[in-house]
Every structure is written in C-alpha cells, then in structure tokens.
Image (cartoon, rainbow, N blue to C red; front, side, top):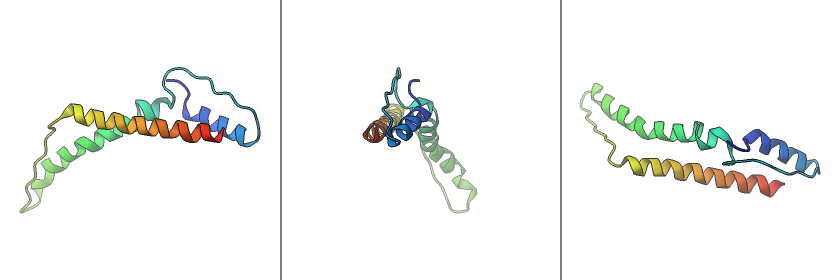
Amino acid sequence: MGLAPPGFSAAITAAEDVARVALIGYGTIGGTCVNVGCVPSKAMIRAVETLHVAKRASRFDGVEATAKITDWAAMVAQKQTLVDELERGKIRRCFAKL
C-alpha cells in the first residue's frame, strides 16, 4: 500500500534530529489504516449503525423509528471524501516537518 505511518514517523523523527531524509514509496501514501482499513471501514460501520439503532428502537415503549439506505453511492462517496481529506492532511503535516 505504499509508505505507511511508521515510515512517516521515522522520517519525521530523523528530520527533527537534523538528518537528511528521503521518502520513497509506491502506490497510495498512508498505508492500510487510512486507505482501506480502519478509517473507511469504521466510517461505513457508523453510517449503517443507524439502521440497527432504528430497528431496535421499538424495544422502548412509545418509541418507533425507521431508517434505510437511500443512496449507497453517496454514502460510499462520503467515506472516500473522508479518506482523501485525511490522506491529504497527513501528507501536508508530514512533509511540512521534513
């Protein structure tokens, strides 16, 4: 997946200690967590969690709730926007320190 967070961390630490640093990677910078793991999966889980909460609302007297996915593509696009923003932010922060 390219240069992962430990690579950024090591480069930043070395640069702060006045070392000359070069980052070499391939593919998408940021590693698995930001691009395909933790961040995107948790964004999608949180989005559909509302379905579960609404379904279980009827266990409380006097409460009725419904929820449904009305635009899957929009939900996926919102998740990707989050990933892209985090990735751009990480790149700016890391390279600003180098």
